[in-house]
Image 1 (cartoon, rainbow, N blue to C red):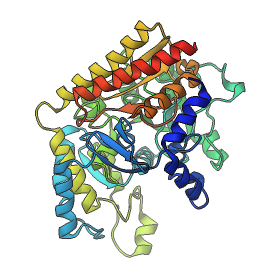
Image 2: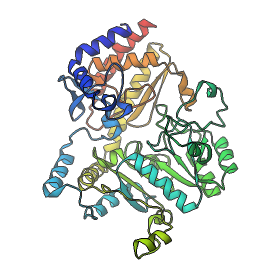
Image 3: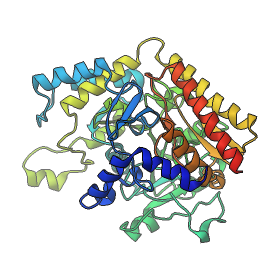
Image 4: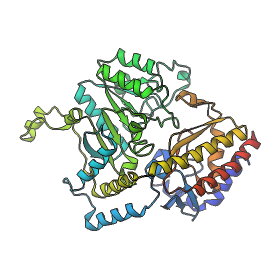
Length: 462
């Protein structure tokens, strides 16, 4: 099957999505709500999800492996979550602008899973969560610079939109001294040139040298316990433990961005899975149970930086305020608290992660076996219900190792699976796909059988 043929098959199967795209693109930038949802010739337009399935405007059903970009782990429209939302909306689910009686219950659930989050606050997205935590770390330390890993994505604000690509001139740069390039335009040069330091994920020795050199300037190091940039990079050689020791020694606040990993790779996310606690933690996606929600928290002494140091008139507070401002109209939205709280409660029940790990081993192990059996060069990285395939990559332990991935093969795989009723995930070759609790062993076998067919096509095309 040629490139043109599987695109033609997609277009034949989704004529209404094409119509929606052509109309939407005239009024909605790119025809989609964010850049990451775009792909050629046009994105798939959905109507709803139910359990392990999603449905498009043409009435096609797909086994869902995008899972709300990782925000869904129980399956779509879970009956218990739905009941909690209906109850809250019936009672009054709109924003109240004051603290609500739901907050403590939610935070107690979070703290059971993440004991390191001694003091918490709410925000509304992963981007807001990491932005707020970076500000808190700066206020706490009195230092301005931040450090992040090359290839790591932490949201859409200026400070973290760096080191997410390399120009042709930078491709052969020293991986132990990663360059700091802004990702896209509109980011002030002063941010790029003076406020960002870049470390290589999974290289503790080089990380230590970079942090030690500028320890008097660096407020925090923000890391995903498992890096989602470049697909999925698993920590090796006790990297997280070593980084924890380095940051403690240097007085640098360690922020774990658990937006992707929190409640997914374990109940307590990466911190439970790897036995390493952060000073500050960002949660979102699953934390909202499919609704807009983020929870931030960490060591009490660090988080108390957000508390106003003086009381009085607005002018007096402004003049004497030394705290980090953390605000938001929709923080702790009642409906999101209801959905997120019920989701976390369900995830805490016995057997949940045993089942997720069981079907994950079945899927990712099966995909790796298919690649091996067909002698297709590639690697499969996964941890629990989170994984990806790298065609033509022998290993993918660092971001730069993923540069050899074969985009053409991945695109064929994506469309081949979608045309057969399996939606793989975020439609870009350096992303990942997700399992959720609604997937059955029969679903996993169907996914593998479908992958078997598509990989045969890829093999025939060389």
